[in-house]
Length: 293
Image 1 (cartoon, rainbow, N blue to C red):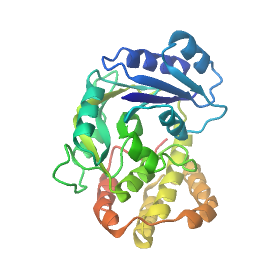
Image 2: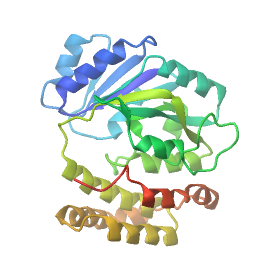
Image 3: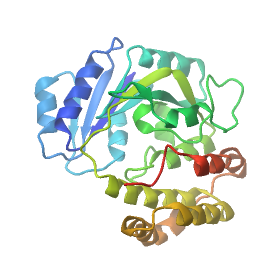
């Protein structure tokens, strides 16, 4: 098992994350991908943790930093970790055992505990009660998407699906990859036995993240959903997102990518749409993921 961490402008949090990972009994190979930070993150990590492989990028590539980190690994499985998350001891070894036992399983999503309060993230209930139908051999509920910072992937499946999209960048980047994995014949599931802790960083721009998240949702919708479903999802978003400047800018950003969308549009197979389309209702009812900020 290897662990890939991406970070940007969060030196102290990245160092704390690395310290926790290096204390794990599994002793994973840890790769830190610094997305062009100017706060000395890369140098500090090299100095304090010589056993960590540090990749310092010249610019912020967002989730694509994970692709770069995965290419630095040689293990069959790779856990992802954000700079404000960390894995519970024993979770990585359990993930490896489960992936060993299920060769068509591409990804496991862990339970997420919010710190400092020690309570489950609201998204956990939605993962646990996922409506996505799956084969009976799955060790947990089948998923149609996942949370990257709380996931373990089969490296071969991840690379075959192309990893995270450079154009999507960051913010809801998981949905496109998940659909492409399922379309490729792989399965994703939630596994209660795995735990990731998350202490949300105070160094974040919630407004910018909402703008990018809305753009990416629209892009994914029109890249992979059939026309009817894409229209319904777009109208739902138009009715429910905040009617403000940020939402308008997110929609305009999506429209600017129209040429790219038309070139790369590839609706997912009908059998995959039938399986994952059941998530539409769950997303409409969700209280865990909202376009706020």
